Length: 205
Image (cartoon, rainbow, N blue to C red; front, top):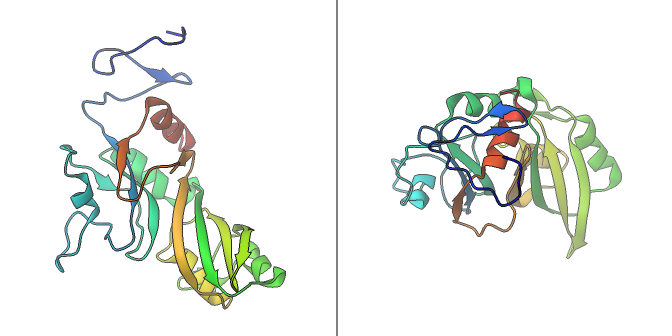
């Protein structure tokens, strides 16, 4: 079907994006969540803290976080029961870009930013080159946009600490072709067929 406005029933119709068939939505589920600060990226927490599962009370399917956002970080979090997609999105081999808006304490100069672009040594070894640009400078603080293609624990925070400018606020805004958009903190929505297709195509599925 190519006519604008044509509707498909994903439960009965075979749907393809760029020639690639999508799995039946009755089996696989894809949820985009804007994780707030103070929520843990797990399905349960022994300390009784609020979890991402608590924010998905109306989602009956059992879905799992793809990657992590730490307790003090916010933004785009994908949850799904599509294990193959989740594995590829998090595996370094596929180099899926993750973009963050980061507020740091202090005003990093060009030399400090260049260190991030070239890679710095953090826990586990030197980071791969990052894309970095300055969005705003105000009140002796800088707002940066940083894109990385790895998935190390607290990677962005460690990188900024390494160059002497600790993170005060961190929000993930993009994962591969998937963007956070204007989704409110704590809110979630199902991915569109187009978004699912783009994610799967990005990792060769």
